Length: 429
Ligand SMILES: Cc1ncc(COP(=O)(O)O)c(C=O)c1O
Ligand SMILES: NCC(=O)CCC(=O)O
Image (tube, rainbow, N blue to C red; front, side, top):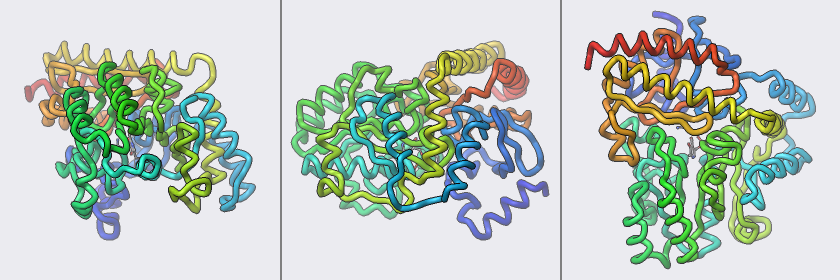
């Protein structure tokens, strides 16, 4: 047994499934998860000392590259001054200002420690503000693991084939109305019949948890129009897309001002920071100003905020997104070209530093399209690449991420290895 295998066996004796988050378990691709020992720039190393070009990026946060020296320095400096105070700090104001500067729709901001907390709190706030119970979410969208949102969800739930979680009382989930993504008619009908009871619509504006599927601009307009018309709150869940698809997130691309936005991942630069925020009149319902309770011992943790602030500074430097987008596009197009040469049905797309690839001839635009992708080919490609030192997310339902550390040479290396892998798997087609 190699060291990854040994550690996985040990882990399984004490941690359910050997992992602290199900998506890490290689459940749908099979094999042994790599236990990571260190990461630097575009690379991660496992416990066998094997190096991988990393397109997981800690599931999104690592946009400036792993262990960026400036971020590490900011974290070390903050740590020297104390790890947590449970009291306000100046940097919480500075990071909130930085976020609002980038996403002006977030007029008031509350920091939390995970994307799950951000969306859970935003939902509670929308319910408290509107005094309504029902919420709309879309099939295949994942918004973390709070009870109301674990209904027909994406990411690990989709990967493991249990799209709704056990343990969520029917009384809760009946208030979650699940509609097909990009289906304007279904949205209009639901608002027409139940509009006055709908507290909010929560959406991944560019879905990344059923692989990557962008909302159409017509769908986005319809969500904005109907929520305005019926007095519901529009929540953009940009935990994944914020600072990723563009500096200002999907809302900057759509030209939409959501009522509330949730962000996470990148704003912590690899440390646990997330946030929800938006219209000042809605945010003023949050405790201690208003009656909607929300709290956290480690919210706005000084060490985590230091990592986030530095990361936000780096991503605002000139040309950051131009370069990132160009590299991501090069990779995404390169993969499609290689698959075509190998005669493998395959498509791909990228937006900013995020990309998706699909073993199907047509670009998927909704959840049911995604389910038609060839899972066997994905699995084979995933393992062929991993064996050659390239790590993609271990599921066909996840998106992939490029960082600023992925230079042209690393992209070219990836494409070279992809050409070998596609040739290898072409034998199965
Ligand atoms: C769109 C979206 N929302 C919410 C979450 C939940 O965030 P976290 O895993 O930090 O709880 C995630 C990812 O996990 C996500 O991709
Ligand atoms: N796209 C899926 C995630 O970002 C979630 C990561 C996790 O749950 O560990």
